[in-house]
Every structure is written in structure tokens, then in C-alpha cells.
Length: 386
Image (tube, rainbow, N blue to C red; front, side):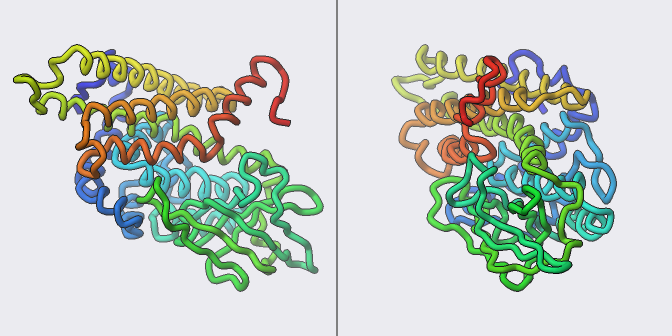
């Protein structure tokens, strides 16, 4: 794909296979998402049947090995996230939660029986998963979560509430994290389990083309076989979050790129004072600054992807990527809206929709404040948030 915003030939840093995957996902978004996403956003819905199409394309858990997963590189996965979020952050969120949170938690910490039961169906989009960590009173401080799992003979009894859960009210299975006598543990809770209910959170101003839910566990009885046997302590869910945050490093640049392309096209066609507004110095300054910032963010994403593929990436490096690239993309989307003028507040154009979505991306899977403090701890050796 020819990208007018790629000023420094970032495409030249990619392999033929990586470019092919990016182009395939880009075409899928152009055909199956872009014509409809404004309507989904306005209606506050996400078409569940899209999961099957994403499964056919091999995008669900694409960076995992086995069980019907494609086993692609981290960079290829990141590029897929970029193209998905160029369509809408809600689409990339669905794929991230399905593959990097729900599926990854089972793939890394589950038993062989749990993997065989869930992963092939989730990879195909036949079953949808969610990841229950955040609670109404504990977002950035999951170590103090109130959800409890208590042993009762050979079973576990789970009680608690999870909030802001992507896919929560449409998921077939939830990975739920709970306090036990031996620390935090993970459990797989299938939909239909007695005592397990969910509700969709309405009246959102952001991520409207994504289903966000609340999970309620009212003395949910589960057999010990529902417990993720290898998940011990807070490090387990945090490792899952690192997987999803990596996708955001790439995905957010997709939203920024799409906003910039929309503003560039508009500036070249909008005539004022007898010439396109793209011919005015102030508009060119905006476009040039945004393009430089976008290219810098993309370089960072590819570099972190190479580190991840080499197995050397560290959590604070993912924090650098998420913090920088999301706030860069958000600033680009807002600035692009100014180029569009009054037209920019409509769903006919993508920048303000992207800006609204990125307000959520800035907050979820680690707020900008938390990622700032992770970087601060790396620099100083002091954990300021504890």
C-alpha cells in the first residue's frame, strides 16, 4: 500500500510477509469495517458476526502458537492491530482482548484440557472471551481487588464485581481474577454458570463501536478444573496486560494515521480564498508536525516489535511505547479535527471519532499516569505509586 504519510520509508523496515499481512488486514478493514463503522459508533454496537470473519482471517490469537492460532511474529501482529485501529479502536480492542488477554491467559496459564476446550473455538471466532481484572473501586491498584475465591471442598466460590470489561456482556467465557488465601488466582467462568451475570454499559462517549460490560459474580460455584493452574500472583494478569499493551503501541498509530489521511484529503479538496487550504502555511505546519510525530511513533513501534520478537523486551519499554504513541495519536486526531473545521464534528469524518476512542485507550490497560510512574521507577529506582 502506498502511504503518503510514510515520510521516511518505514515500509522498507518490514519483511515481505509483514507487509503482506498488513495489506490483507487493511483490505479487510476497507471492505468490512470502514463503510459501516460510523453507524456502529452512532448506534453503540459491535456486530458479533464480525468475530467469525476475523477468525477466518486468522487474526484472533494470531501471535500464539498451536490450537488453531497462526503463530505470527510480534511485528506482524502489531501491524494487524495498526490496520484494525485505523478502522476503529473498538475493533482493535475486540481483537486485543480476545487474543492477548482472554486467549493468552488460557494459552500461558491454562491446563491442556482448558486449552483444547477453548482456544480453537476462540481462534475461529466461534467463542468470545473477556478478561475480568478491573473492579469499580480498583483500576490501577488490582492488588487490592475485592473479588474473592474461597475453597469449598473440591470447588471454589467466587464473589465480586468486575467493571469496564471489553466484550463482557457478549463473552462465552470470562477469565476472572480473584483473591484467594494463597494470593491472586485466575478462573475460567463460562456464560450460563449459576450466579454469573453481566450487563452492558450504556451512554458511552468513547469506544461506542465496542461492547463494554460489568461482570457480577454472586457466589459462583466452580470446580477446581476451572482454575488456571499455572497462574500464581498478580504477575500473571499483568503479563497478559503487557501482551495487550504491545498491540496498543501499534494500534494507536493506526488511528493517528487514519486521522491524518482524512485531514490531508480534506485539506487538498477544501477551497477557501481561491485555493485549497492545504496551500496555506498554517495548515502545512499542522500537517508536517503531525506527520513527523506519527513517523516517530511508528519507528518506536517497529523497534519494540523487534525487541519482542527477539525475546528481550522489558515491561517499562512497553510502557514507553503505550504512553508515547497513544498521546501522540490523540494529539494528532484532535489537531486533524481543526483542519476539518465544522465538518470535523460529524461522523462523516474519522478524526473526532478516533479522538473520542483514544481518550479510553489513554486510560485502559494502564493509565498514562501509571505508565509515567513505571518509567519513573525505571529511571530512579523508586516506586512512587506504592
